[in-house]
Image 1 (cartoon, rainbow, N blue to C red):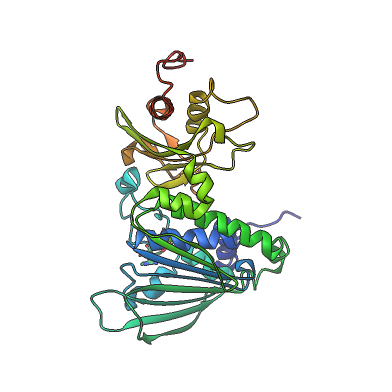
Image 2: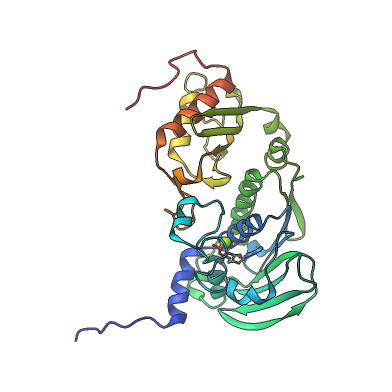
Length: 340
Ligand code: ADP
Ligand code: MG
């Protein structure tokens, strides 16, 4: 017998779509932090319990959400950040798909308190597994607090794939570190099971964030990079060759402050160190690559962790030259590797 085709029930479709955004608690933390950064927060507090599985709270002092907009924030493809197809060519915000809150609410229990600077009182919205539980007025400070409880409470199959609390907490800590490194002008405070794990000053000084994240010794081994080549500006810190590592885990690249995995940047960095470190050792870095929004496509990966450059060469050259200059080895070898 042939099987007939039918359109999925909305609730089932919602769960499938949610699965693409929310893989584990760390994906929730990433989305909530990006929303807080997009909202213009200066101070963001993240608190988790049990690896984020039972409890995640993110509080920001950003622009808040109008009470009347609270339900809409949880509708899939509802966003305040993008309007037209043309906007997609120029994405300056972290969010743009309007899918995060809808996805999180589909597979968790979510409570939001929010107030905009213009309104006297704020709003509260509670949603469990896509079902509205409460929508009311609430007194709260300007900004947004989102509490997420019981991740995957209604999708036991997914729940089974979660790792130990400590592993999930470690993944969350990693995400918080990266977002803090990308935003030195924002103060981040990360509390895990009641203990403060990270506290950054939010004064714009990247080196103090590096100190907070990786410690004093690591920070002491960093050299500043500041280099502009064509339309690409590279800034941040790279390590002295003697402080190179046995893995690449301390290579942090940001494109317009978005944490990414970039083969181009990695290759350029390592090429710059070629003559100064041993094989099997890898340079560490915290580098931000600033390029015009319309020369990079951020809409190529579900978690937006990979990006596509319209032209890789200027990016490679800027990172390579910037690092060479900082290391003081520019001109020592061929300035640039030959074009393939
Ligand atoms: P996106 O970030 O892609 O727009 P989300 O589902 O993450 O989609 O959020 C939906 C909308 O809710 C956002 O466009 C924004 O208007 C609002 N929002 C979410 N989080 C916050 C926050 N922390 N502060 C202010 N507004 C927020
Ligand atoms: Mg978002």
